[in-house]
Length: 152
Image (cartoon, rainbow, N blue to C red; front, side, top):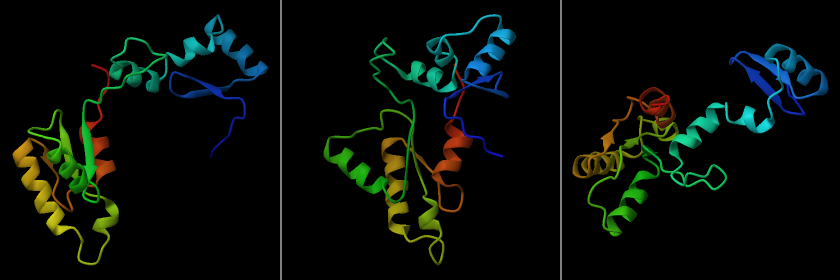
């Protein structure tokens, strides 16, 4: 069941949802001993931790995000790599996964992008990327299972 909150909510220990209402704040204060400010609560979220660990500015109000991994699928990676090559690419600057889009794998016969896949494989070899062959994974699944990581 899905429940929508008009006022926002706090999540305790990853399991309990407490609405950001007068009643909810009172219950939260009773459980925690003190009511955290919204900023304190924000700093305890997974999203805040991810942004903080990738921020190079030192200021969480003025983010400068540096990605640690990249991935793109067969519908876009040809154009991305061609643009990078024209700009002087010699090596991928970080782990870069060339994978598949589920839409292209739904085509009759399994893929409509065979030449794109060969291009992707050759570029992964040449520039140091990771190539995922058709029918092994799709972009979202591969990113969740192979690239996502917790705090280091």
